[in-house]
Image: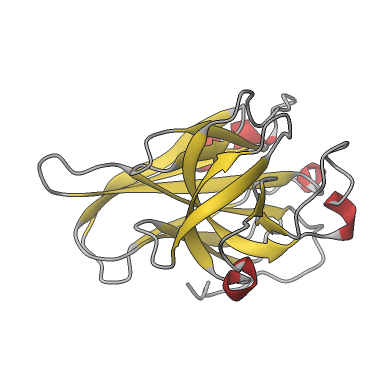
Length: 221
């Protein structure tokens, strides 16, 4: 697992055009955030919505739902891409209790331990993917969407029965030349039942820091 992450981080490849033309119907899970000043001009000549999903590059808007009530929350959204406006979706429905989630904790410093926790708990199969950039591959409305670009790797997988979900622990490569590199993660979860769907979580991401901040001994997630 550690060597796979190192290969990805040291890769020079960059991705990714997100989203497609003509309009498509899709669902995806993510943490709703207010659009930042740095990203507000990213999509001319289309009007940039007030909301985006953390770690994805996707912007969301709705003429029927007040998305302000979901800011800071991890939710599953259903909507349609806005014609000729890359990465913008008109949201038509929101599930405030997504069937797959991902949380990150730890300090992203070379040589430090970090944890990605895939949830919810119970007996289920979990997968953890990592990439150099976000992306968008819409799947079925039940499965959600794969939100990582190229290159990407399946970093870990297994069956877990923990009430808190699956904890994936690993150590960042002890290489200060990685400082400043962004890393993106997404999980997928499937119940151990015949015919169960593989459902995709929100993205988590971080930028690798320099060697000065201390490691966090016990990641709290």
